[in-house]
Image (tube, rainbow, N blue to C red):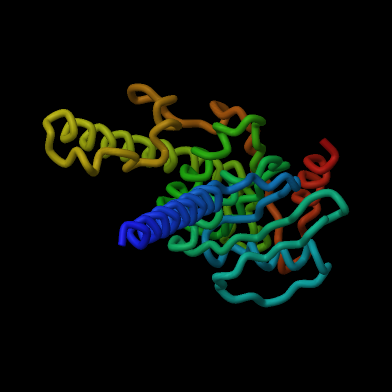
Length: 255
């Protein structure tokens, strides 16, 4: 009887060891998969608000053709564009912005970012666009190397189009107000945390917190404050008038 008990004990011990080992490898695999490896291929990103002409620009750059496009949830990638970089076009819908933010974080060599805007838009309607741009800047400005941005003012052939410098100034104003709003919100969250109320919500509520720390008091934001250069240039995808943007892109690929 004692022999049987010993065998059972040994078997249970072996089973426990096996189960513990399997559990260890499963947990290790999950941790490894959760850590995203940064992409080493150099890339240029094309992004901006919906219906600004991003995908049409991507198509023109990669095929030489102008095509009518519709709002999409897909990411378009041209591998080895000009035999130098991955050219990546991201959806503009607000619910899909996280895809761009994740890619910005996980791409090691970013040669530049083209932010396409509709030059005919009323400057008073740039609030959402500025919020999106602020999210982008919070990533690009903490990268190891400064990331230059081109504000590509599309549809400049239209009679109602505004000059690039006016669009740039309007975006600076809106980004400045967005910074003020987010800093106020962050301050209120921190105050609640200090009082012990809503402390669970105080951690990492604002992913832009690190970037916002660069702006104290009532400092008005300007693009000249950034490490990366921000240029604004007019063009028209539908008219195939994108020489200014192509020159900017060529300069970044040659750098």
